[in-house]
Length: 241
Length: 285
Image: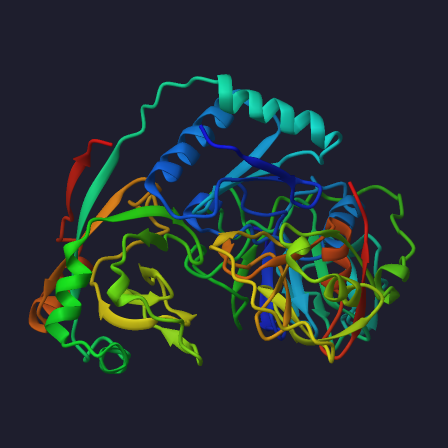
């Protein structure tokens, strides 16, 4: 249980905030509260979660904010809902080659690292999917080793290609579609993270984890081909939280 | 098949309803008409459900050919609409016949015009909404030659004349009513004062957001951990730039959220164009 802050966000949303740090304990607490709210609170149009916040978008505007804050806090403290959400670990192949990563050379130079070191540090951790945002299906990942942290680019790219793997600030993530972007692009994955033609357009959800695996440029081209033809199945394991 | 053909697209035309709800946890924006007030009005004139998909047109409109008799209405920016080269009224129920050509030109006030048709446009339903958005719907804007399916048109035998006077205040006001945003209190007292009572000039205008220029010193070192944003959220970058996010904006952001536009203010802002000026006025719950 945390000491939460409840605020009106405009007159049709309520913002709930946890302590300002990125932690898995907080993430799973946010997801558990979200679960309870979906079950026990009325007037919910949608719920969005981020690193340490949960925003409830309301169907009707707020009439009495103090009343709503009280109701929600009661749900947080007393509400109970069986979690039947399954989370997974997904194995994501990434090619760390300047042929597909326009900022790789610049990044290595600024961080004074060799390519093999970057790869070693980037793939060693199990990254936590904190939430999806910024673009459809775009995962905000936690767990980037400190040695790879770097401020966002001063001049963002006008177009980052779909599948690009980037690092910016203390974060790493994958661009799920072509988009402008301010992160250093240090790799590329042939995996599609978002497909509107599927009933479940994104396979990732908050609470899942990702393990990057390094592949060569040749393997990248090969896999891209397979993915395009719908022949590639992503490796995954059930995560026991 | 009831339909409308795009003879010539306008500057930026999209099909919009009231939005794609419930998808923010997947990073899918709300989308939907930017000027909800005008979009709903167009539907109301035709006794459509308020969520019926309409055509949102920006600054310069398209040329459309009706392939069936239809009942339509135009609200929002006045693009000097003409049917078969005869001027027709805004904010009025209009009857068009097969073969009629609707021509929309450059807006002489406002920024976005809405075309509603009886029973709405039936282009592509995706995750419960017809709103265009790249990567979600097959098309992200109207193209030349496109055929737009529309709902069933009843043969209109009535004589009721639907017309609503244009509320010019909606287009002329330069005041945007706003709530204080989640990070408003992180600004210095001086900066908070600067936000109200000063005018801001629009430097960029898109469905993702409006950018403003100001000579005021709003630069700051406030950093926040990425959090949720929504249409109407006004962000302040570290260099002091203000950005009012609109309906196609991303669902999360890393800049402080200093203000939140009211629903009314979003509709008002949607009718403003680059170089126009606005002022923020704070309102409370």
